[in-house]
Image (cartoon, rainbow, N blue to C red; front, side, top):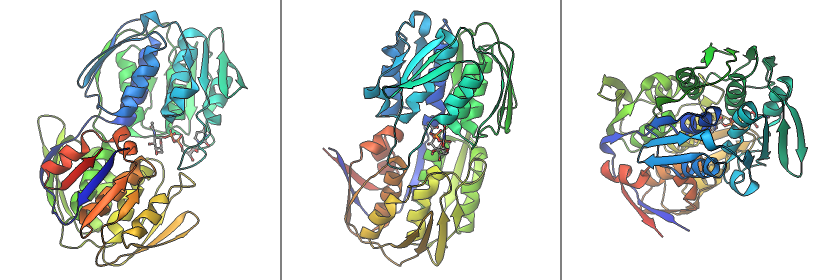
Amino acid sequence: MDKLLIEGGHRLQGEAEMSGAKNAALPILCAALLTREPLTLTNVPQLNDIGTMLKLLAQMGVAVQRDGPVVTLDASGLNNPLAPYEMVKTMRASILVLGPLVARCGEAKVSLPGGCAIGARPVDQHIKGLTAMGADIAVEHGYVVARTSRLRGARLFTDMVTVTGTENLMMAAVLAEGETVIENAAREPEVVDLANCLVAMGARISGAGSDVIRIQGVERLHGATHRIMPDRIETGTYLCAAAATGGEIRLTGTSAAYLDAVVDKLMDAGCDIRTEKSPSFEAIVLRAPQRLKAVSIRTAPYPAFPTDMQAQFMAINALAEGTSIIRETIFENRFMHAVELARLGADIRIDGNTAVVQGVAQLDGATVMATDLRASAGLIIAGLVARGETVIERIYHLDRGYERIEQKLTALGATVRRLS
Ligand code: UD1
């Protein structure tokens, strides 16, 4: 299994290009299932999760063509509406095929994703919504088995804000008969990007980005070309890495518009941040002080502070001046990086969903283990500032969500090496 070796103590400096958003690309790839015509996507990041989704779609009969960041999907030959356990277990987002398959084929058999390191993560809301739209759903032998003649529009209310739940129901509703209203919808920018792509394919959607989304079902969708939005979590991660090292960086191909909560906290920590127009989207320029001030955060659905940035902020707080309180309100078990950060010398006390981080003057390199995708990012940030060498084990998590991370960090002046 690959490991990452980081020699700490180098200030990040320079420019890096941000990739397309994993969490926008995954649902949008599934949107290709909704039409018999080709869907072409640009700015698709080259990540293991994207590869897994493309394999999943291909085994359903979707023709996939990939040329770097450009992916064309043709689902005219869709003949096997099945998502097997072996594929779903490696990536929870596979559940995103459920809504489109039921809408297009009137049937689907999708493995239940099961739990994952950060929590139980059930899909009951996806099932509840599709049932309200007239799908007949049973859970048999670990699979969600859904059937319907045609979905009907309905008024849907999710018990909690769920990102992939909102995306699944929106994709199902675009081909349903009549109007669907999703209340308590997720407002994440990735939901808006999916809605924009669906509209380009002929769907009638309003309200995406607010907590009430209205969809008028249409008979069929057509092909389209869509550019995937920039990855706000990748962007936030590099901003944190530069901030932690007292660096100065310019990130291109991204947008600060999706990052208000993160930028705000980095400015509270003492960073100077400004945006510049660049040919592709926007550039964000960050200049960090010698030592950051501790900042408290509380994760919550967009536009509040993202849970996917919590581990990175725990890492920067570990070395900041003062004490911070981190509250995780989305996932019940998302503090596993705290124990690993403690191996580097961080002072972190956990009590339920709250972590109290007392900033220390110095971290020291050690061997640590990545437990999930964003935890890995937090450990990299800590490794970049720790004295001496840090070895991060199980970095396959990183390859699921960060495109060319060693190259990008190296170009910014970090000393990072992959050990196979
Ligand atoms: C998505 C993101 C993930 C991010 C998360 C929260 C993708 C591919 N992944 O995950 O990176 O961390 O949003 O911003 O976009 N829940 C239920 N029942 C359901 C659905 C969700 O109880 O049917 C709970 C979950 O267990 C969790 C909370 O709702 O506690 C929010 O989860 P959700 O927004 O659904 O996360 P994902 O869409 O899986």
